[in-house]
Length: 132
Image (cartoon, rainbow, N blue to C red; front, top):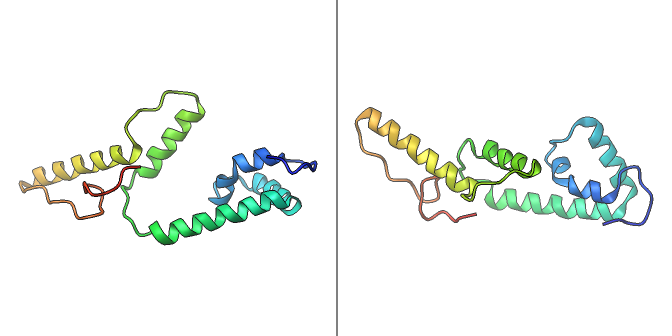
C-alpha cells in the first residue's frame, strides 16, 4: 500500500511493522520514524487506528484467559523460524505448550505420589479449549 506521497519511510514498510510499533517492541529511534510517518500519512494513520482498536477489543474480550507461561517465547521462536525461511513444525504452538504443561503437571503429581488433577474448563489442559 502507498498513499502516493513521498515519505522517508515507505507506507508498505510501516504497515509491515505496524504490530511491532503497536506492541512497543520497536527500538526508540524507529518508533520516532514511525510516528513522523503516521503524522504525515492519513491512510497509514487510519490503518494504525483500526489495528489499535482491534487490539483493544481482543484484550477486552480475551484478556482474562490463562495461557501457558512459555507460550510467548514459543510464538516468538516460530516467528524467527519463519523470518529465517526455515521449516515450521506442523503442531500448533498453543497445542505444544498445553501438552508440555500437562506433562509438567503429571510429573509434579507423580513426584508427590498423587493423582494428576483434572484440568479446569478453559485452562491449558482442557480438551474444550479451541484450537488455533
